[in-house]
Image 1 (cartoon, rainbow, N blue to C red):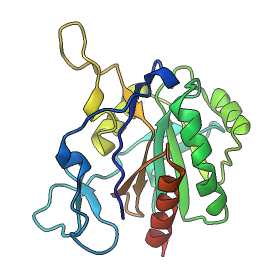
Image 2 (tube, rainbow, N blue to C red; image 1 turned 60 degrees about the vertical axis):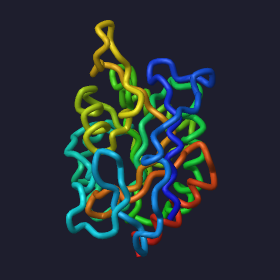
Image 3 (cartoon, rainbow, N blue to C red; image 1 turned 120 degrees about the vertical axis):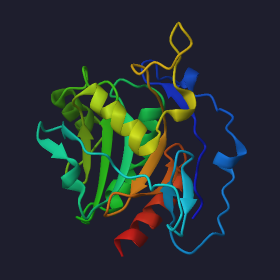
Image 4 (spheres, helix red, strand yellow; image 1 turned 180 degrees about the horizontal axis):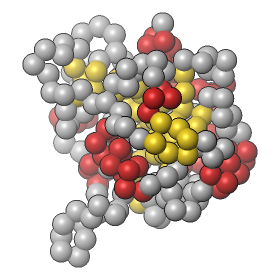
Length: 227
């Protein structure tokens, strides 16, 4: 499996094509040794390291607890993903750049797994104050998102940001700094990255939603986990 870490970050509050600028990252985060074992690795530690042997490995990244609302206003929790292979993204409905591209490129995954109850796509809103269930329902209809497979989630901003950071380090490399030069917890820089978690909600793969070929690889990896 090729772990894709082309982490192109954009401001969640100003997501546009103008801000989709590639960034430089340390070699240890972009040049994984892919000969460590067979099958999908687990993704572990602060540096999102792929590991095949869990003995003496850093803690595996897992999905944190959450309780939010989906586009139909129904409560959706971590427990809803038990025994499911899940693709996770972060987005917001008014984003005109990366988010629509990722949403479009995920359509083949929705189509491929539409009758597979063991697969889900979950997209967490980064602007939950404006992304109400009603707004997300309209977004789903506009983008042909089928609730049978794909859930758009909204709720408490701090809970969503905490989940993104603790589970995936989703904005680790590019958080904003406040006027005192410190990280601001109210800012969030997101990317087109898709995270794949297994039936036990362990992180197993990282992919670029910008690249259809990477999404196709995610589909193959999800199938392997389901099987």
